[in-house]
Structures are given as structure tokens and as C-alpha cells.
Amino acid sequence: MRVDYSPQSLDPRSFYQLLTAVVVPRPIAWVSTLTADGRTANLAPHSFFTVACTAPPIVQFTSVGRKDSLRNVEETGEFVVNFAPEPLFAEINATATDFPRHEGEFDAVGIAREPSLRVKPPRVAASPVALECTLHSTLLLGNSTVVFGQVVHAAVSEDVLVDGRPDIQLLRPLARLGGNEWSTVGEVREAARIPYRERPAG
Ligand SMILES: Cc1cc2nc3c(=O)[nH]c(=O)nc-3n(C[C@H](O)[C@H](O)[C@H](O)COP(=O)(O)O)c2cc1C
Image (cartoon, rainbow, N blue to C red):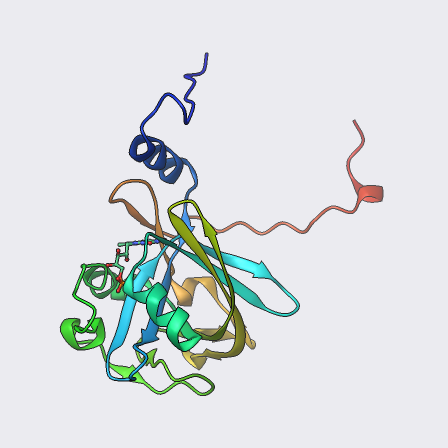
């Protein structure tokens, strides 16, 4: 037996809650941006986030509604996706508060920044990975805007590298689940993809 839900019979908020409870776990892009005058550095978590294209390297995040991050990206054409690690849990959540636009979360929450190499918005100094992006395009879908950013530079802390590769146990990513739930990485399994010719019979 299954319980059936249709977007027509549920109010949009309830369907949104259902979607975010079942599309899990979601990685968190901790997006830093600058206002057009360059004065205010904004920082906010976005869990509607993934890789959109590999060549050229493009990532995407979705702004549900029109928020400061989206406005800044539209006006400046740049943003940084900072990796969201477990030890920065409280700081990440604190940057999800709806501060007024002129009150940047870096200053309001007390988050140390460092300059980016290729774009103007700063990186989060304590985050182990920064993907510096220039705006590729945006796509308006109903109440949301998908932001595509071309990754023009990736800066990875050597503290999370093992044999030159980012290591999951050192990265310790946070993820978003449904409601107010967050998660960390559980058991990690490795399995190579099975070529068609080598698949087990039956
Ligand atoms: C873990 C987490 C994930 C979030 N993901 C999103 C998201 O994908 N899209 C979105 O619009 N808001 C998301 N939010 C809410 C925004 O972070 C929040 O509205 C924030 O105030 C936006 O900041 P800004 O106005 O400075 O851009 C998320 C919040 C948390 C705590």
C-alpha cells in the first residue's frame, strides 16, 4: 500500500515539505556574495544545490523567492560556493537568519573571511573548499530562480587532501534533510561501476 499525494490536492507548502523530506540528503552550498557597491558581504546556505555541467564546470543553486544572495549575484555576476563542514554547523545555521540586506552575515555572525582569487566576493576562511563562480545564467521557475555559476577557480585546503584528493572523512560535509533536520555522513561504501559485459548473469 502507498499513500498518494498530488500537487493539485495539497497546498504548495505541504507539497514543498513532502519534496524536501524525500529528496534527501542534500548538500549545502554556503553562498557568499557582495552587494553591487562592494560594501556588504552576504552569506547564506542553499541546499537546492548540485553540479549542473562538467565541461565547462557549472554548479547550480536555487533561490526560493528573491533573496539577498540572488539579488547580489544578478547585480555583480559573481558568487562563491563555500563547502559546509560539520564543525561550522552553528555558524551556517546563523547565516540563514533573514538579516536585512545591508547587514552582511559575515559581520553579523562574526565569520572570518579571506579574499577569493578570481572573483570579488570573499571566501569563508574556515571552510575547506571554495568554488569561485561567475554567473552563467538564471532560470526563473514559478516562485524560484535557479542560478547557474561557472566555476572559474576551486581552492581546497590541503588539510582535507589525501594523496591529492579531497577525503570524505576529513571534509565532514553537513547535509540538509526535511523540516529542520540536518545530517552528517554515515557509513561510506565503495563499489566500482560494473561494465555491461562483466555484470553477473541472471
Ligand atoms: C540548511 C539550509 C538550507 C537552505 N537552503 C535554501 C535553498 O536551497 N534555497 C533558498 O532559497 N533558501 C534556503 N535556505 C534559507 C536561506 O538560507 C535563508 O532564507 C537566508 O536568509 C537567505 O539569505 P539571503 O537573503 O542573505 O540570501 C536554507 C536554509 C538552511 C538553514
